[in-house]
Image 1: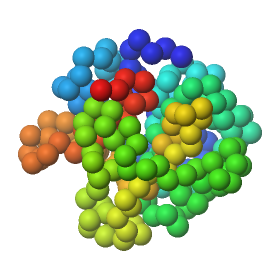
Image 2 (image 1 turned 90 degrees about the vertical axis):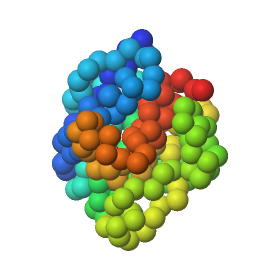
Image 3 (image 1 turned 45 degrees about the horizontal axis):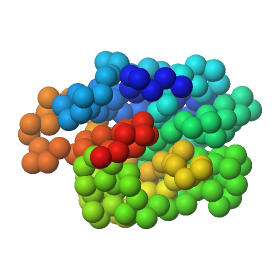
Length: 209
């Protein structure tokens, strides 16, 4: 995997709707440019889960609202990618622990890594202080506060850990939609809500403060 330059790689999978939150990648890339000095590819890369191109990228993003049902090749690649040191940030656009995306994705993870592999991570995990400090764990999204989805505020994230590091970070908080706006509009926010995205990416790249 190439770690010298960061590429925001989005996973395209056969089922469901993988192409969500279309402005979010450029927003996070702008935040990395603003807050860090890491070299960046300026545009998002779409990579098919069934392709060996997946293994070029140490960070990948997977999201959707609908069914997640991997083909045999997609499943094999996903498992190999995670076990070989890759990092997948998975975000449920439904913000619903009982929704179709959540239930089907979690079933896929159980099939690949075991029924107990996906676990809540503590709110003092180093992903919450890899760059910016989030003492209370994962920041709340406006979708949670507005009662959309399952009408819950999720005070945790889940993860599959491989040899002491997160391989799959899983959110029901809908960060993708929270960060899906033109980066130039951040000046209207009291606080930049993409800062946790910076933490996720730097943790994935093995860069910690």
